[in-house]
Length: 385
Image (tube, rainbow, N blue to C red):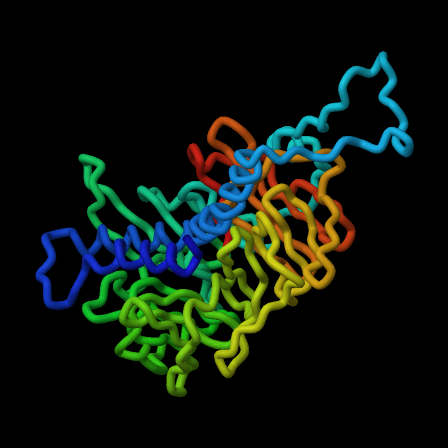
């Protein structure tokens, strides 16, 4: 299944439950909205799993066909000394062990969530005391967090947006997480000035409403540097900028990080390609070909990082590793945040339900630890903007 098909299927399953003509049961709206946010956090995982299906199938086909590698040319290759035994691939190092051995660097330059605790760049820490939380984006007024609250029985009771200021002060936002007829999801503009929950567009520097999302918008996919990508009628995608008419896109454009015009798009043969979206809505391919296990792409579209932390020159497909030893792959839904075209923050497991943030330079092929282990929960990551 391609990324397009997988993405569409999940969206239909998660969001078609809430039709305006249907009167939902009590609490259903909150549950649907919460599931929508969970799905946004998992899009990269779905993309990667979808992209990997073809690769797995290809490997199985080769194995079942009975093909074997050709015998080594003994006239050119030296024989293995009898005392060395059979040559084996180098063992892969556990990510937690690798990260723990990195030198300690500066604290993260951006806010992050460890479980439901907000860590701010200035050093302020604020525990939100909620059931779950996710970062929507950094605005000029503060960090916007989507939170879920449970009742005493552990059942989801409500959702809301919280604004966290640089000193850790929190304010409940007036914007609702569930607006009848509005698009699902909430996004922040690349410059942090504007916010929309799928209905009105709010200028966070003044609090004034400056526009409304197109009525046909159903799901907000991302606010890229070229505008908001949204889906409509389940099968169509559009690019929209404030004050302009929507531009129809030629199918699913890809998965884009907030504020970037560069994203990832799956292909039928089980790999991924880097793409760029233009203001006209045209999507062009940046990579020389499809890249297996591609996790993320730099904002300038020149460099890719794979799940086993190899750095790929997308123009030439040349690869180098961020580690001196082979590593186990990071989870495909691991949080990653590019600080600039060469530097990134990555959440890696630290064991016992904890993770740490690692800062890497793709130019210098060097990594350092940006935090110690922080508790996030089993199979969770430190969450980044």
